Image (cartoon, rainbow, N blue to C red; front, side, top):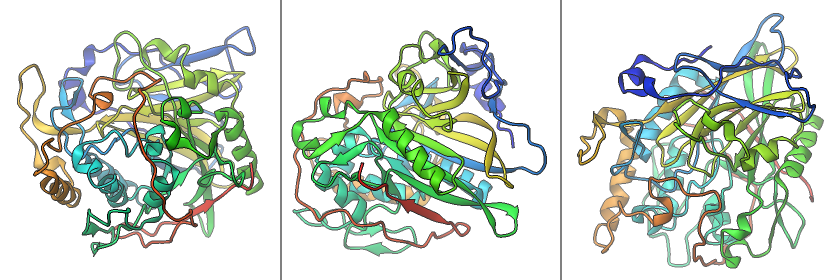
Length: 468
């Protein structure tokens, strides 16, 4: 299934935005004279598709859809945030966009986020120890998440509590907690999704803090034979330089490419032929950016440097950290890869379409579209007051947002407040140092199995790498 931008984006005035270079590049083919040359391209126009062809279909194919977001930063309320002339973002509006796609794709999809789902967030989220944003990700049926640098703001023990559940030292102040099955709990339930951290190692044990990768199986249409996709989660190795020492105490952040390549080898041993890298690191468009563009081609970016050293088995990359949106390909060492990023604060959702040979489990091609998550009846502009469009919000998540906004209202700083670091203006990749503390919580335990409610039966397998 091919995804194209709908005419409403053209009506919103996006047609005037300049984009990068169109492509349909085959694997192991490069027009560059140097074997190590890097070519990063995007699209000529909004109607152009960005797709990478890896093999000839040669028969029956099936589709796997990846829904990806990043850098939500506990953005419960959208406020006046905007993008490309439209009010955009906010948890309930992102949830509606995701759930609509999940209903369309059924069992053939996985929902991912590439870090910084928590931390540097609005008061309505931070006042309750980042629990509301985690509850909302549960309600959006997220499968996997890479850790981001802000996941470590309060230290590894607090992050382990976010994964596993349980009350913070001052109690479960955010109760009642909404559950994906429609019920509630008076104890924080933890994340239904699995955090992944292939390049974050616990010094005391030599093991990764969370599993290095997860494996999800999808229907192939060939009886009981499933298609397996592996998801490798990572954070930028420079995290210790942008988080205070207490946040990263007892942890080592390894080289991203080296750790990803080890995970690829482990996945191959399990028969997984499609590894997807979900990494909290990225780049920027330069000049005139566009929702589905690649202006400037991410030249000289941190993500480009990582990609140059990745295993050729990694052909799809979900990136983050820079709060930028782009849809590009990177060709290096004769290998072309698709790479996406979905802005921040829930303003963009990346819809990635993998075409798979169900017989051998190999990737045939990959395509992507970035979707603007609108939240208003009117376009944005200087001095324009947003007119919310309730039809674009998920009512279940909106109820959760309302719960925590109301609970935080007596505080002197309203819940729409945001730290300077996470203002709508994009922050530099280096970030700013934040003062954080750590609090003791139990050690990590294997993720619990929870029922998936209101969706087709889902199969999820998480696997941890051994000592690194």
